[in-house]
Length: 195
Image (cartoon, rainbow, N blue to C red; front, side):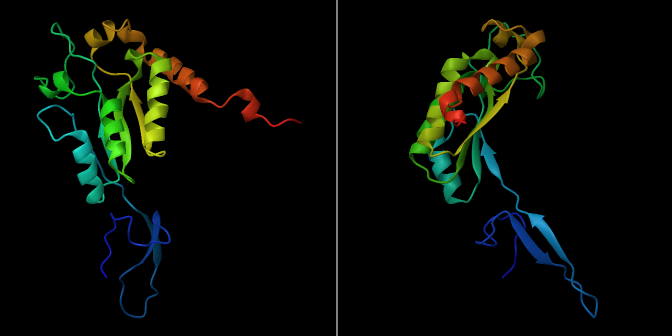
């Protein structure tokens, strides 16, 4: 059987690490080397004119993809002056993308193994209490398959509409992530056993 180094299905006993024999011939000893399996995921901007997120998740899972990542933009201001990092023209789907948490919850309902992720969640534009609840809800609905990808964003005008200053966005991101970790932490009585 030929081995594909990108597949995590090579060795059912150890899906993360595979020992491969070096293909040397002759009297030389064959050297063993360890190769970690590569995990390949998909990303897309879910819109009404793209494949629906739950359909994409089901098809990606059937084809062995490891994960599905959905981005977030609450809106794109019409007076945007921030340059898009990808070039001169901002693609239309940035202005029309679905909410990632609702989309990932729909995907969780029709899949069993594919990891579901935000790529990325703009925590600087969100309330940390509601976001923590959305994260924990999708994680529960997906039986622990949720990956929380976060970022601070590039669109200063979009941030400003949420009351976020572009210059201090990374500080705010850290504060909100720490707040969400505290919100999601088990109560102190459950974290510490009595002496």
